[in-house]
Image 1 (cartoon, rainbow, N blue to C red):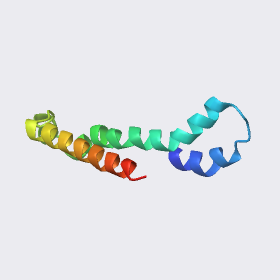
Image 2: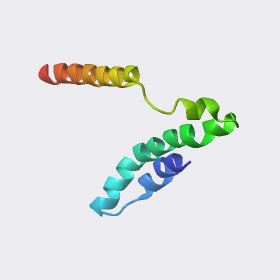
Image 3: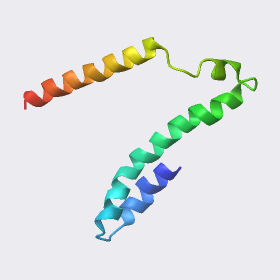
Image 4: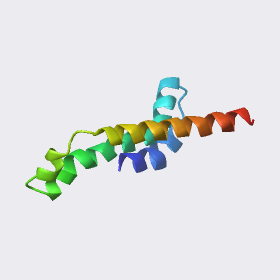
Length: 87
């Protein structure tokens, strides 16, 4: 809701020249969903399963999760570096 409000009304209607406000309005549509998605996982999903056993019992990352997160990050960096060197 905040994302839509800022994107549709606040950003187009702002005519000031304050660089801090311009920067904040520019990054706000990225910031608010980044806050909302983890909030969905942490606040709403446990409510869907009132016992919370599955959510609490598996709350820690195992080595496979960490390894594949790092592999994904390295792969992204390789693709990004390759793309940048071609320009």
